[in-house]
Length: 198
Image (cartoon, rainbow, N blue to C red):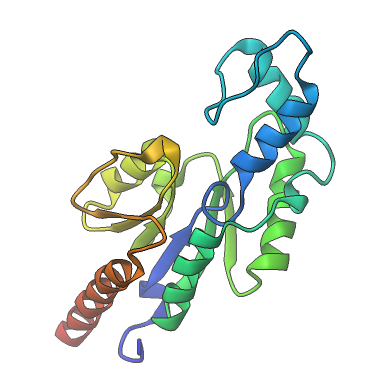
């Protein structure tokens, strides 16, 4: 479909944690194992206390933790649409500061689960070029859109992005894949028009 547009002009950036893999589920499972008998059960949202951050750092630094993360179906639904429209796939994931092993393990996870994608591990997603961003975290989305005001963002539904709204974003909740496809086709059509105008 994208024969009249250079693939390098149709870059789709796809987040890893919370988009392609179930980071939150794995983290909650492992935090539950560390919960003391007098501590209340964990909720869906992680506490931002110093001791909870320290526990998360401990969990993330375990060798092999990142490579064992399970796939998240919503992200793979969007990935299939991107492949069908012949976007050039790039996994764009943030590298944790306190877990340097994560950088290599994230690459290994991608090589196993998304072998046709290039991989960028970065500290700042906003600086990376793409026509499309698929990401679940509103802060990263807004940072990317600062530099890509005409970019499109697909937002896999998560509790932390409920209510997030932006004219350049469509939230994918597992029931509206046709809406996602229409928006992606519009990006493709605009790229074709620009290519013909050159």
